View 1 (spheres, chains in turn brown, blue, green):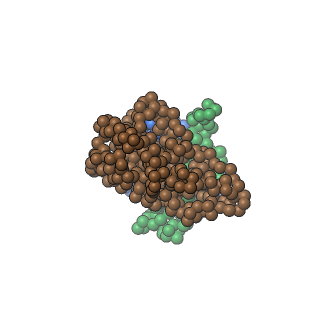
View 2 (cartoon, chains in turn cyan, green, yellow):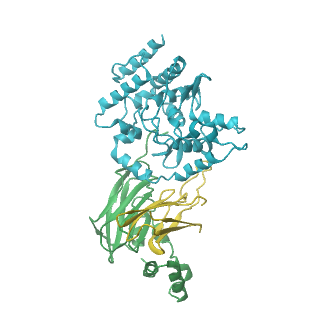
View 3 (spheres, chains in turn red, blue, cyan):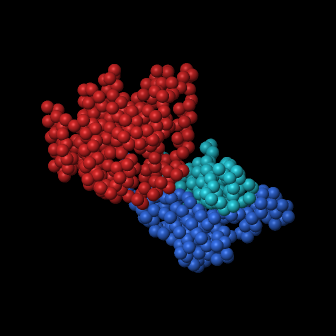
Length: 281
Length: 155
Length: 104
């Protein structure tokens, strides 16, 4: 029954002119990823799939060159430094974030979002940070606050620079969460009636209102971004922004809808190196 | 450019040279770390800004390269690099012609500093980015257009 | 400004490649605060000077049109690894900052 719904959605998407090839409703996450890569590389044979980590910049040398110039010595350097200080400051009880996290927080970001079997839901890196805080007698951070969670998350993610995205979807509950995220991605929403895929699959590499649209593969590994070089934006804030842009009401950051979306979305970038803290316009 | 200032720059260990110069009455104390060129920086058109930096009828030069984007990703952070091979370059100035105040900066070079400046500038609108080079008592110039757009749906 | 500036200085052949990232809001004085609607007062670095082993190499006058957290790159021929680069800036309020680095 669920397969039929997904098949309908995917066929509907295909009807928009998206040739997803032999997409099967039973596709495993790895198959979804491969088919999406094939779609993009068939459409843009001259753009290397490794460059998709740069998003829209992979399609425009002039933009990429500005990114390279700015990333050589990023203006937001001191914000990452502020994150390092937050990371290294012990809680009131003397413990540190490193004690909560696997490998002391190094080279772990690519494993998130992760399906937590015990909790029966997807958990994000931010959830893990807040769990650590609360377990050590501190208050949870507001997920979208740039000065607290954003800055700390930015530093923590930098400890995983270069890590290959490694999202695992194993077992029926995890698969259901993944499929829920996939459904959100492919479902039309809002007054403008666009799905995420309308832009980021069907129109990746083309322009919408002078903006070059980025492909979904390579999307989830390069966060947070610094808009204009100083405005820290995390991935789920961008989801909220995209919902607003199509004039839909967004589920809030940290909700099951957005966590499942991030779970699906991140799996699309499996095998691609991550980079935290990048410049975007 | 202020010749006194240039001589202060040329001497090694600037601080002591300044002290000597002040003591000798060559420099007033307030002049020592010479005044910021308010008139040039606050000029509201490129002609007045050029006058303010003493660039009267500079010669167009192909020996000045401006590396800047064709279309700025974000007008608040536009990477601009000026390179010049003109012998004896002692300063480079950068202007964004259509900015409300076109003069962005003047960069005086001494003691082995090459004809090269890299920075990031703000641009209010599509405009020529102009470089003015002082070398061997003459001024030279080149310019490159940088387009500035207002984007669509970046969240 | 609380945050120190960062300097990276490396040799490329016989030319020292010096990159400086300063921390400063670089307010032009013409921007309106989104929340209050009031003009944010002008607050920007006006002068940046750099020396290598005490000898002046750069004297820059800049204005509010240089981007927030100013970046400056310059090259100096004849400098050597181990030489000391010192950068100073002064802003329109008279605030100062200084940093140094060794050419690597």
